[in-house]
Length: 464
Image (cartoon, rainbow, N blue to C red; front, side):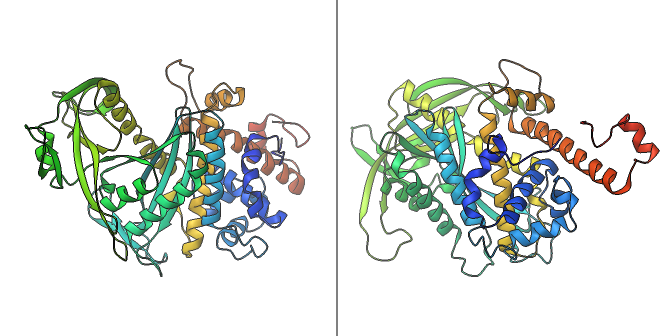
């Protein structure tokens, strides 16, 4: 049993889009085996990746081949094999994948996440990031963007950065780079579909909104600064100046909606996933901003009509969601739509959880920042393969992977990326085990009796 590099294989077919970045066969083999090893080991520790690869596990210093590749030491004929080019190729592949099914909308979900290295001392350009238990630890920051349509999703942007690295400007500058990079990539597809950025409160920033609006895109963003000055309707039909907190109290009720969320309701000892009722209120407000916010040179002042939306989750201790959007919200259907759009922001949280727990991106250990970037980017390449698999459950291969991952068929609960990863890992472990056993038999002859007892007479000329 052997996993051949066959272009009809879904895995190698997916990786085919990355082949232009590679200039020689040895590097291509190392690249494909590294992605396999990441999926198999669930880790970014190079020794574990190599050990789970049927090829790298059989050669001397397989882990060193990975390290030399990601740090650029052995890629003179593959100068474009780095994090930026890998991410750009992921974006191209994801956009083609998203465009395969017609959709009137494209939702863009951006968020940051910390890559924590609390015990690292010698890794390069470590900065301080937030610890899960509070306080600060060593690590790096990342910024990612997912693209969503009703039936598909793809990774459109990822960047790992540190405030300690040479040439670093600022976190807002990193955000601006993400906004413009993705916008330029989706420009050809905006002729027949709208693009909406769905953002958490970390993007409550007029410079962010201004850039999105200049790109002829829409925004749904959670508000953090309730003391922001705006204008909202007064009782005479005109406009009065005040703060967002004042305007919230005057929003009319537009809709009630049911949704499933992990919440702790009144009287419950802990949070659990359950049905909750959301009350949605909305009304128009005016936001004034200068076009030269965080820009050099003169600008102009613009006043824009947007909608303020408040979502209250009844019978729960969660704070209300206060949202701003440039989509009109004047009736029940529009209010429910904005609520559903913001609910999708959890998709990127799910992606971070998946990458950290199943692909082990916080385990990365290298003494080269570009190498760290490249290895983490390869983890996102692996994640992209699971995204592509997970949207087509009707494939017989996906159903088998799900069963290998412990999934029980239910009409209302399709397998997620974690289940598919677990199934694929089992399959890859079988391939690796077979390769190691064959190599041992070739070099040493019959297996030790204790091992042979487990194998029930298996020989290298017989399949597992």
